[in-house]
Length: 133
Image 1 (cartoon, rainbow, N blue to C red):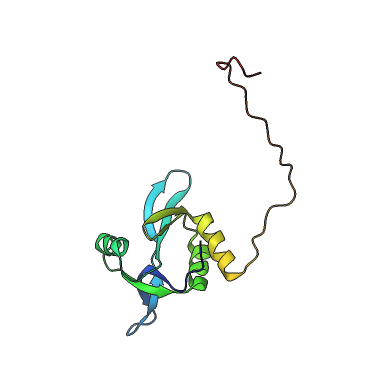
Image 2: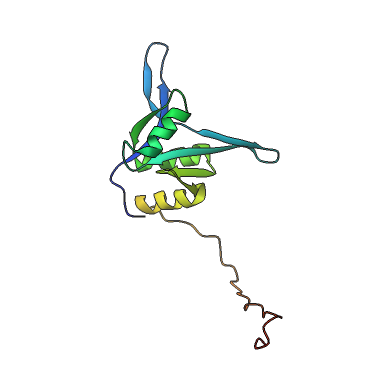
């Protein structure tokens, strides 16, 4: 993914005080409930302020708006809400994949688990193929 100059996200009005609304906050979308894992969340992110995906999301989620957000805002939202899916311009990505893309864009090293053996097994031979063997 090429570096994006500006991101936009589906947001809700932020809560600041009794009389004032705070800045918009990235909205977490309730995708479904899972018996073992609880509530499954997602977020909607865009590379432009207007488009088909934005219109569909605004119609589908009452009380939302599309607002500019930074890569840092997205990183914080990913870490706070741990969404399993990110809808980038309407395309579904695994949350972990999007988190890696944002970290890479921000120059944050991606930690890999300690050493592990990468044993790659050869392709199983096909018993129906007489030449396999």
